[in-house]
Length: 284
Length: 266
Image (tube, rainbow over all chains, first blue to last red; front, side, top):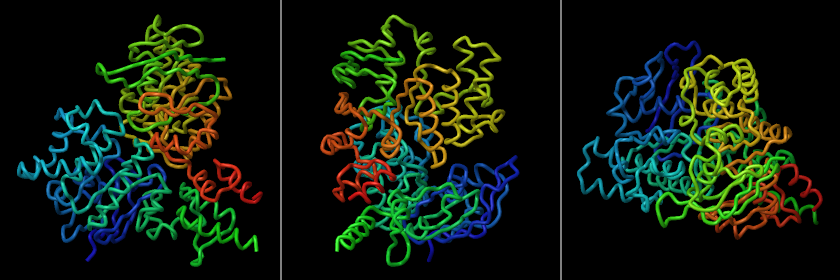
């Protein structure tokens, strides 16, 4: 059974004329790692918020269609029920950190306190998620004394500690250094392999192509395509949607090198393989 | 020509824990990227340049004058800093007021401030949002407004702290063009950034900070040839460079076009 089923979802923020989400339908299976790409204001963050129920329960506005998680219909449920199943990591970590806690350790405990996790288990989960994000050394620091990148890791750890079945990450690596973003992608892949469903909005196209099972391409509130990275990034009219394919794909497009399935490569490994084949062919 | 000279600069937030130690750099009109791991001291360095925090030792001179004798207010006319987090910067009710605030505050008259603001908003492509409340806009748009708010001050030195956060492909191209335009105007542009592809395409010079010290300071292309040192700083090569290194092409290409040329010349 699908983990998330979205059918004809339409949504309009209050006092706005345009649809932020326009007739979106898709299904996501348990444990899938989904990337969402699209230009600014294409509806990526709004779609994320519709899965945890902030749309429509917090923002209000006009709503049609349905979002169903397991057997819970988001519209008929509430955020306090949904947040036990779905964790959302905010785009801006400065907004997610509560400000009511004085240490990183307690900040990560905040969500767990709110859902009544026993003390021993809380400590265990906090230690686990701090270790996963490599922030143990900051555990006694005030979250607001950390750098942007460090704070972003705390925000991610706070959600992982809640053990949600679905984790939504809205540009989780925007303030991280290259090694840090690689670590986040690997940590998230590990969770996905353990059966947790992952939905990630990200502009780092090369990483999306390398790690995600499937990619959603959004444009002006519509879902243009939902398919494997290779299918999505091989689209001829990708630039019409304000998206550049991975650099490796751009290079192969210019050299007109396609894979056997007629799609362009999207990762460095696939590209190297094709280029090396091409070179040995030329040399013969 | 604008120049910032940093001499023997050290700084710590808590005693005995140096965030920057003995930094010596001269910034000139070459567009310069400052890269390094989270916590390497990048943001701290630019806050020192702007006088927002004071060094524990060493000196910073802007065009020959030490900043230790200048107030933050007078430095504001010379250096504009776009904050990493736009929400730390934005506080006005409308976008236009926000972008006019900087110029008004450094003594530019209302008419000129408005013209400067309108021009800056058009540069970042936010003209149509002049009358919006910045907090009704998305993070990516607020970041562009934060950039416009500094551009409108028309300072000879401009520092961007991670300008591409939350930006899509089109806006990144826009930011690249703004950086080139500022350089063309003869301004000194410094940028803290984690996007190595952006560094490769946009900056002549790159400085790698690692644990509070300068690890490499060179032409961008040469910096990316130091694979081992970059690894030490927990940094990666730009995607094109990785590909050209794996294929052992003669040159290390940094851009797609370079790569295509090198490929055919192989």
